Every structure is written in C-alpha cells, then in structure tokens.
Length: 147
Image (cartoon, rainbow, N blue to C red; front, top):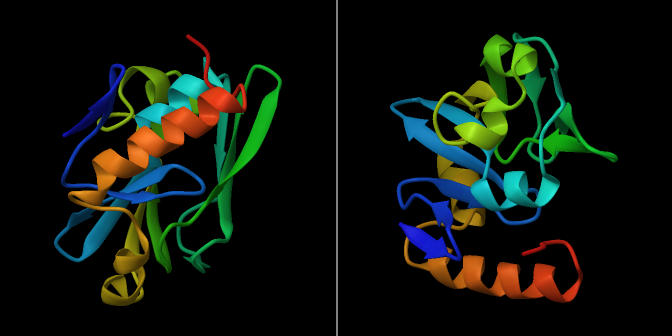
C-alpha cells in the first residue's frame, strides 16, 4: 500500500492521476471511487449526484458531481464502458466518501468497453508511491492540502 502522511492508496487499485478516482477490477466489471487524497483535500463531502445506470460513458466524460464546502466538481470516468450500477447509499450518505473511500464509498460499477486499452493510462503498482509523494508535495505548495 502506498502511504504518505496517513494517506493510503491500496496497491490493487488503478488511479486516475488528474481526477483522483480509483478503479478496482473484479472479473469483467470495474468499481470506481474517489481516492483518499482527494477526499481529504475536499473535506467533508455534503452531496453526491450520479447519473443513472444504463448509459455508456466515454473515458474522461462526467458521470456525476460532488459538493464539499464551497467546492463543486465533476467525477470523470477513468475508463470507458456502460454504467451498470450506481451507489445509491453514497448519494444519501455522501460522508461515506470520507469515512470509507475504498469500501462503502464506491461511486459506480462499470462494465468496461476495453479495460486492456484504458487501464495502462492509470497509475498502478510500484508507480503509486512515487506519484502519491509528488502529488502531496505539489498540492502543499499550491495550498490544496492543509495540515
């Protein structure tokens, strides 16, 4: 597990470096959620809105939004595919993104269009620790991460 200053990124996940979303492959399906660094930087998440399941989504296209304090931002798909399920629990309890980002705080379940094409664009494995360290240092310089 990549760890820096109490921020954890599990090794088995793939990370979208710009939007800080993770992908967990489970057979032919992929769950997607917000990584620990992003949820800590955002602060308490007050609202999550997700587009309904059943639609195809292109990599990089918005599938929902979150609100935390004065921040409102999009969730952009780290991989292309069809959204087969959304986490209704996280919409009614948005704080799950803060309290359990890798468990109950997942956002959507996707049937990937072509995981072999999309996953290599994400950070994974040994590269995760280095990416986390550089990102935290950059965010601190820019005032995006306090503490």
